[in-house]
Length: 437
Image (cartoon, rainbow, N blue to C red; front, side):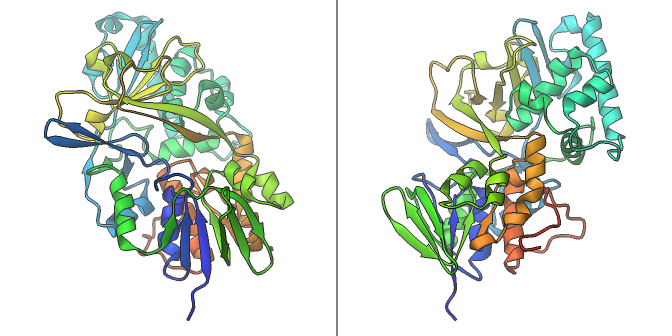
């Protein structure tokens, strides 16, 4: 029996996993505009003496509890993983305040904070915030309610907002303070609860891919389950009743029966020659922020006090600064054995004088429009044999991307290579209404 042809556009985790899933039933052609596969998965190889260090600059960590499909995918690919060390710190230059969250020693990295009434009040308020949110029932909160609405309603101080809540949320979603203030409150609480972020103990154990996250891409390619083209930048998707023609920017044509668009939502919309009213209304609601990333060894992009150094380090100039900047301490995150420290800094105020790698990432911005658009994605799934997946369908992470791909496999009656356990929780914000209902 001749397999029908399906094109998958975009080779991030969503496109790669969709290609693997669908290859059991379809002849899959994966199309990627860059000269490499992987999207946000980027591993930089550095030679140090006689060793080769593999340092991730995009996707870095996951955990088994909150990333069930990704964990199963890695097991399916027979990947080696190791335990990571997750911790958070904050350093605000003009306020001369620094603290870490991994221990009492890091919390009071600045000894003056032991005698600072303002700092001790901050700790007390953090405990209040965590306890309050952990036990909170969301029944009375609508999707129109924002994080800032909640903080105003419950009279949380500017101190905890600017020195803890906004910096931590900015670090997680790679958004600035203005965007975080407008983050949908229900989604914020659900994410923090599910990830154990309101707990001071017994948080999920985070892991990383041994040898760098690009190992999973190598494993996928080695299986030869589908064909792929790099340097194929899609200019136009022409959809007819019984076929789809995909045209590249240099005039190449590919004809298929179905297409899965696994790019960012705004990019997906631009590819469609004639988007429907629903496609335009839904996909246009997703916006992205552009973030600059450097891999380097410059200590000045970390907290001044070594005791405060953590895996994730929010670096700010002043408490009123809207900008977001974060330094990942890669030695701590990936168990890198070296006499040199390696950092990935996102959006530094000034560029490191010397660096090993430089790139840009786009991350989704979450607001009330986004959440409402997520619920409607089902309405356009399958229209003119076109399907959509991407991390924007959930919280913006690898697990959301692979779950969105798994959903398309389910719609097309393709079984996953593993069985989900009975406690599986979807991270997708889809409504129950489908295309054609």
